[in-house]
Every structure is written in C-alpha cells, then in structure tokens.
Image 1 (cartoon, rainbow, N blue to C red):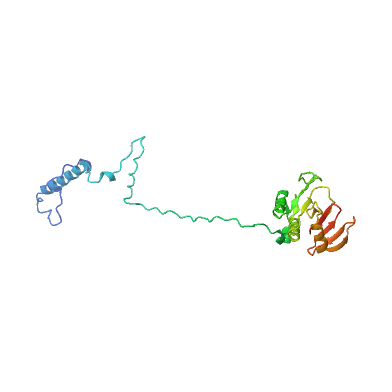
Image 2 (cartoon, rainbow, N blue to C red):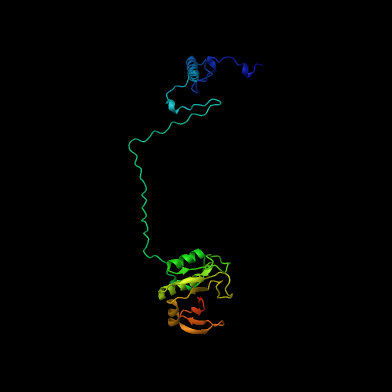
Length: 247
C-alpha cells in the first residue's frame, strides 16, 4: 500500500473550492488559475530572499564589525563650539599688609598670675629684659645654668621677669641683673634655681628708691635687711647686691 509520502502531484480534482460546490454532481471546475497564483507567490518570495540588501541607510549608521586583531573604530570627535567662549576668572581679594605698630612691646605687668608661673628660655627672657631697658652681667661671660660664674635666665618664671621690668619702669633707675637661675645659690622652693629670684647690683638710684618706697620687713637670718612692696616682692639688702624674691 503506498504511503502518504508517495502521493502524486496534485490534480484539478484535489483542490477544495469551498462548501458551495456539490461533490456528488460531477467533476470540479478547472482550478489552474489557483495553481498559477500560488506559483507566482512562491517565485516572489524566492526573489526577495536572493536579492541583496539595499544601501538606503546612511553609511555612518552602519555597524562595521572589526576584524580579528584590529581595534574597534573610534567614534567621531565632537565638533568645536562655534563663536566665542567666555571664561569667568575667580577674583581673589588682596590682603592688606599689616603695618608694624609703634612701640609694640609686651606689657609684662599685666601678666595674669597663672601665666606668671610659666618658665622661659634664656634667649626669650634676655630679649624681654633688653626691650625693657634692663641689662645683664656675668662674671664668667657665660649663660650656662650649671656654672656658678655665669648669669643664666634659663627656666626663669615669667612673673619674675615682669617684676624686674616693673621696677625699672617705676624707679626709672638703671637695673643690672647679676644673678639668675644658675648654680651656686641657696636651695628651696622660692629660690633662684626655681626661677623666683634675681640679683641686681647696687647703685645710687635704685638703693634710695627701694628703702624710701617700700616698708621694712625685718632682718633675714644672715643679717640682711628686708623690704617688702605692696605686691609682696621682698628685697634683701646684701653687701654686694640686692637679692629680690618675686612671688
């Protein structure tokens, strides 16, 4: 029995022309026009498949696949802007130079008590004394704190420097500092080594100023007369100098 794959070419009798035809009456009408119409449609489809793509799109929009080993093409660079381009610059205000003030000196008499306890280096302390008109003298021409022949101001208290400058300003007398924090002085809490004391030399101006303006406060254990100011500063009149304690 022949299979369905061995079916012969379709004939005019194999086409169904619709339900209006009576299959029992006789042969179906000629349908060669339908076969011709189907063949024409098939040829049109084959023609479209074989026809190459038209180049109606712009060549710039076409995607070009890079070959093996080649870099992909770079996109076109942006066109520069037409016309002038305005660039705004930031304005920096010029700082006014600071002019040095006349007589710009530190008023050490207004130093607060907690600031008076601060210690100073020899260079800073000697600079302050020089600006206030107070001189220093050393028998050994040195400033080491560990040699008794030197006159050192290393680790001296700020209140001590302020006190000796106040004495110079109020008395208007020449002041010469001959002893500071160097070794060789008596120990103690309120001593030279801890920055509470300074030695100044005698002269005809400062001697009467101290004895006339400050009250007598007795005699020290070594026999030196004592004078005390209202602020609590104690002046001991030793044979070669004044030993002054600033608290």
